Amino acid sequence: MKVYRNNRPPLYIQVHPDDNTAIIVNSGGLDEGTEFPCGLKLIERIPQGHKVALRDIYEGEEIVRYGEVIGYAKTTIKKGSWVKESLVLMPTPPKLTSLTFSNKVKEVLPLEEEFTFLGFRNEDGTVGTKNILGITTSVQCVAGVLNVAVKKIKEELLPLFPNVDDVIALNHAYGCGVAINAPDAVIPIRTLQNLARHPNFGGELMIIGLGCEKLSPDRLNNGINDNILILQNENGFMNMINSIMEMAEKKLKKLNERKREKIPVSELVIGVQCGGSDAFSGVTANPAVGYAVDLLIKSGATVLFSEVTEVRDAVHLLAPRVINEEVGKALIREMGWYDNYLRRGEADRSANPSPGNKRGGLTNVVEKSLGSIIKSGSTPIVDVLAPGERVRKKGLIFAATPASDFVCGTLQLASGIHLQVFTTGRGTPYGLSMVPVIKVSTRSELREQWPDLIDIDAGKIATGEATIEEVGWEIFKEIIEVASGTKKAWADKWKIYNDLVLFNPSPVT
Image (tube, rainbow, N blue to C red; front, side):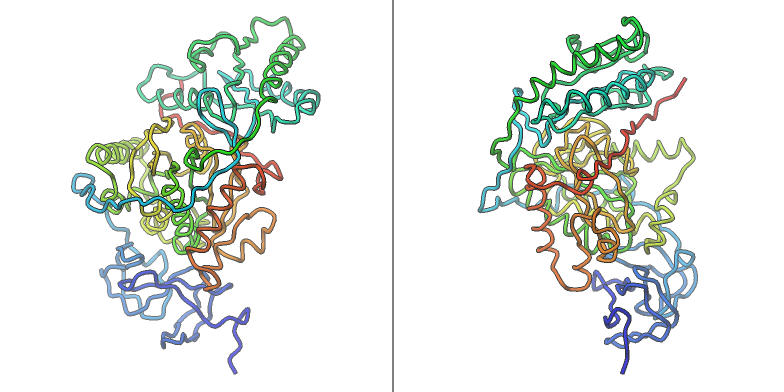
């Protein structure tokens, strides 16, 4: 009698009928000689998540996954063998000049049921999912003072205002010693300006400046000075702290008056992102998120997906979904800008994926891109945002950002997300202080390893214990609960928050 590891028979996943590769599902991988019910026999040991050749793939022949070419065989790869990174030549990226627009735009039919969440309605009509006193800096020089002040505010003032969730410092490394008028300086500046407008701050943001920086504090607040404090105008350190405390107390009193009320889900802006991806990302977590994205769009909500380098090699699959040529040209513009950005830095596409991604079975950025874009669902793309731009339409939006988790998160915050759904296969404790982050694991093994960090396990899709649709609905309902404050994501429970990281492609002087 054959005994299998974890009492599971050997299992692989072939995503598309045209695929000549499949990924190994079993935890710990499968040994040489393992035979599948279909008759495929492994001729070497293959780790979990890595690809097996379903037939002989000859030298120079296409290697196919997701029904798309992810590379070419450097040498003949025998049926039943491990399709390793060293055996795969990367294909050229799709030409931006040959894309076809708007020929696969689906009609969006609304859900029969109207969903609501409990949020904070602001005076300007925006809504929030948290009630936070945000204090931003105009320059890194003041961060040390602000950190001391925020600690005192949390200890001495915050307990007096029970309706306020938190006090956070929006520290960053910009503001001075930079080419403030360089063309690309628009990116970090508008990012900071739009972070200051985030709806979770309820219009009560504070700005702490030094007084001699290149980035004038009033540029972060549309020229309004009643919430700006300049440290060079204060008499000594303790006066600085006391002045910050005094302003904070006034702001906290106003924020404490905010109350949650029933709001349509159509008011939500949700960001989706992946980090620590693996070969399961494109078959479990990301498709489930994509299904949840479709549910959100059908409810009238807005969803942002991002990460240019993880879209670029699959852009030919997105271009047919843009609603018109104007949006298509914007998509090309952002892809082209990033191509040039990488060229200036003498970087290429092989810099992505990371070593951890590769250990998880991802061969190259082409395969990673094909698995990444699935989390955008299937609805039309209604707009494209340059880095740090604010949302201006409802529906599915591509917000151009680097693939770096921290930079992407910061830019999505600037665009106005209320909550982020984050998929991971390798695992990361990443979190954002300004909005909740829901973690979705691609593998059940990760959920078992990190039961108090992963919110939803999509790995059960790979083993057939749940469908993509079932996990998609689970994510959708989790979004509503977390946005309402009736449930906390693990990152918020533990207060695991990453620093803001601005995208600054302009020179530092």
